[in-house]
Structure formats: C-alpha cells, structure tokens
Image (cartoon, rainbow, N blue to C red; front, side, top):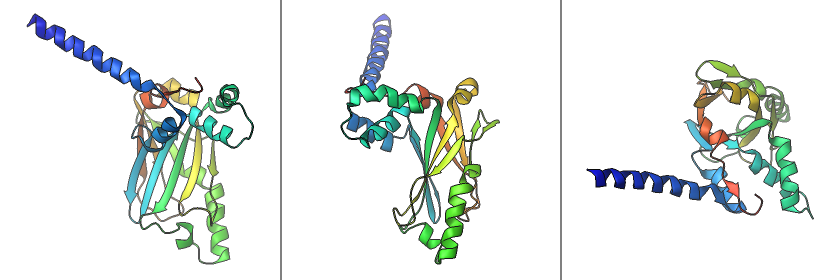
Length: 210
C-alpha cells in the first residue's frame, strides 16, 4: 500500500509538470490555440444561425496590432502593445448562417434595408451583449465595435470590451456571456460560458516575445 501511495503521488507530480510544459509556445501556435481551443471558444447553434464567441487575450490583440505595422521590432513593441489592452477583457461575437451565405444579404435586399441593418449593428449591438457573473451580477460592455462590412465577410463580427477589474473583483469560477438578439430574429437568449482560470491564468507565454 505504501508503494502504491508513492506511485500515485509521482503520477500527480508528473501530470502537473506535463501541464506546465504547455505554458510556452511559438507565435503561430499561440494564435492557433486562441482561434480554436475550447478554453477560449464557445459555439451555439440557433437555426438557421451559428453563433461563436471567442475570448481575445491582450497578447493576442497585441500580436494583431504589431502585424499591421511595418518595420517594427516585435520584441520591443510587444510590452507597449499589451499595455493598450490590459485593462479590458475582449470577446469576439460572430453571427453567421449555417448554410454559409452572407448574413446581412439575407436581411437586407435594398439600400434602405441595408442602411437600417448597418445602423442596428453599429449602434444597438452593445445593448444586446452582457455578462452575468456568479449567476447574479450583470456587467455591461464598455464598448462594442462592428468589425466587418457588408461585402467583406459572410458573417457578422463584433468585438466587445468588458471592464477587467470588475471581473477580477467579483468573479468566482466562471462568467456567462449572454446575447439577446435585436436584429436577426433569434428569439432565445444565447449563452456562452468561460472559466475564470482560462481568462486570467491559463494564457500561454510566447517564446519569441516573453
């Protein structure tokens, strides 16, 4: 029995070490993980729509920002770029049709309809997305940015920023992000759940920059 206890403890230590091995990765691997890993991505189907919510860590946003600038020393610019995003928690909400067709084209067939839908996406969507922490505390986003245009992509893409300090102060284990539709005719409230540890602790280091 004593030997069995030693083996179990050794196995637990080995598992912890293996988890630690995944905390550092290259830039491309980091971006791919944020784009695809279940820790940072939630998907809900509300026929005929597919709704996706993705957590965007400050490091991820900093990398995207640096990528838009030419002749920049990434290692030197990286800390300053992170500072721009460190006070917020950013989430991307993507709303698309499950048949792959352009979402807005299915809502707007005339210039007048397009103008109305675009106005709704630009000015009303901030009120449609909010966080519920610990099942009771409601937190609204600081801002919402409609990030794509009519002929650019089939899906509607929006980026939301929430106050990071507010989340840190009251969040216990998880947060539920809720989308209450005002534009597309989705009757149910759509929910996406993220764990606190994945928003604050389980963010891998980037080998080339940290």
